[in-house]
Amino acid sequence: MKRLVPVLLAAALLLAGCFSGGGGSDDGAGRLRVGLSFPPTAGLSPYGNEATLATRLGVTESLTALVGGEAQPVLATAWTQTTPTTWRFTVRPGVTFHDGSPLSPAAVADSLNRAAAATPVPRALSSLKKDTQRSGAGPVEEAGTPLAVAPEGDAVVVTTPLPDPVLPARLASPELVVLAGGAYADPTRPSPVRAGTGPFVLTAVQGSSGASLDRNPSYWRGPVSAPGIDARFLADSAARANGVRAGELDVAEAIPASQAASIAAPAQVVGVPLPRSVSLYLDQRSPVFADPGVRAAVRQAVRPLDVAGSIYEGRADPAAGLFGPASPWAATRPPRVQTPAGPVPPGTRIRLATYSDRAELPEVATADADALRRAGFTVDVTVLDSSALEAQLGTGAYDAVVLSRSQQLDTGDPVSYLASDFGCAGGYNWARYCDPATDAVLAQGGATTDLAARRQAALDAEARVLSADAVVPQVTERARIGVAGGVTGVAEDPNEQTLITATTARS
Image (cartoon, rainbow, N blue to C red):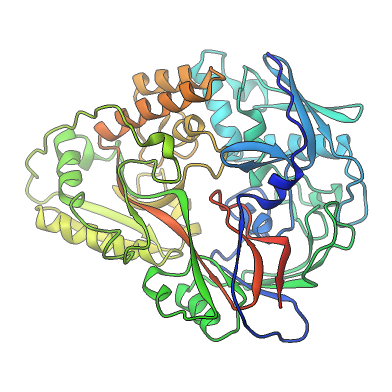
């Protein structure tokens, strides 16, 4: 099968829309003051969760972008599947990196090959790597990386071990951005400082406190409205909300639901439905949850909680499953058979953890802990920052964790998301769930190019995961972005990959 995707610059630029505030003040310079919620620990390296910080600030770009769940052209103008395991991506001409060097097929191949060989493998590729293992193609680790990229004329040829129908969507991942060669002075921690292609040039990162960016005068899409960005990394959600209220921030992400109502006109808080759920993950290998009846008792204890109405104050949606309103195709689900709740053995202790970077999560964990105590459990609650918690996930340090997880952040493909999070070899499987029958459903879905069939496979796998009580979805989130009066052109991106664009400006 061959597929050619035309250039759709308008869709790629809009990235699902923009909103604007009304009225407001100007400090004379016009630089945007932006508050982000996750302090970086690796200088905005693309090899990890902070990769999205660089894309949200308009620094880095990938070959493609996700718009409405579909891959659209960015640094690639078109692509064709030439064989079942080979794709050819035409590289956009006339693009220069922030250091002045030209974007070329060789530079694209170098960036992608480095990312594919990184440790750990980027999540967007880890599911491809594990999908290959599940399908019986042998131990991919021994063969090298999950993909290989080679320049060919005005294009790059990307080869995967087995057919990958959603490869263009995978390449939209912020962990697979294309950087100038100078970014790899430390190959284990690439630096996007003066190395991206986006509308803003990252000039300095001040550790975990902030970053400075200037307008890219040679941006390939055209003029950039704002002269630059002064970014602040504020893990304290109240500080972000206070910054918008006080006129000290023009844009701030992840405004706490409890603070949203207090931000008054001309500033505003804009809600964007997200493919992101807050769920309680139960470690399937924990001795506490070896008994399905005990897992069911947890689900029965926490499911009645009105997390959306109470903790999120109506600025989120009750979770019907892992997929919510941002995935309308999931509205009709297959039936789910739930294990009856069993008795809670006396003295059963649950080590429950979450992270503080999202203000609501500690509140959700507290509400869950109270409900579990009423059900007869003893519960210890630990709250860490996200980087500290992630370092311990999957190690057995906790029996249960409350996490916020996007289903489209890595690939936009629900099958790949479930393979990563609930596949036996999934790279993000914090429930440590392993069911060969679920893997078989995902492998079958992952082998088809039919979008409806892939989505149905995702719903079938979701039903199996939820029936096993590997995870208890509690709420589907909405982005709550604080926007000062007079600020326009801030992206409404349900994929949470884009925030500041070339058109973002303050009047």
